[in-house]
Image (cartoon, rainbow, N blue to C red; front, side, top):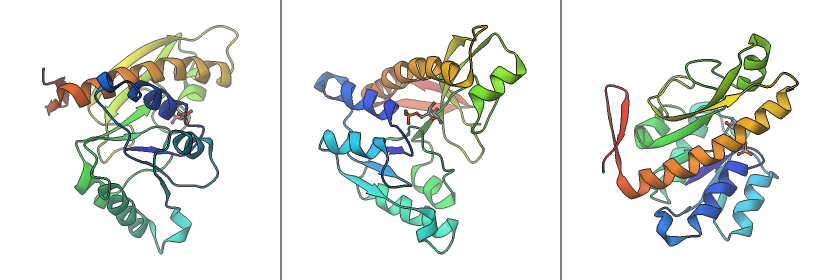
Length: 197
Ligand code: GRF
């Protein structure tokens, strides 16, 4: 199960990898928090079921979160991948899918948490940034780290060029690790994520 909010290039990388049965994971559905995004169109082109749950269509954030948890549960996924999903999930979602929901962050955690990782890295002046795959917990980009990739910051980078370089690394990281998580299983002990085999 993959949740998206935008262009869905990370989703596309997983869909492409999953076309090979040896990959070991299948995208059972794609959910989004908004309509009319390329991420949903990518899923539709692959014949993957989609659903949209918009926060403003619910009485409050908790009601949205409960509906999201129920919609995702309907597909009985082993793993939930937040791939550019621009909403924090809440208590109901975590109760159902905590420990088996992963997210990507376009910076090297614990640096530059939040929505503007590439911009913050550029403004700070770091020479190396990157991306982080982590298991979602109650914080913002704070969960146990599955993998990280380093990406150089070049002198003439702007936010867009840096983010694109990060996204290339992010897609590779995501595809490799989601496949391994599906094929091998994983444990989390004292914040350390280890593949089972
Ligand atoms: C990724 O860089 C993700 O980390 C960030 O938004 C981007 C999503 O890109 N939060 P896409 O929708 O997968 O193309």
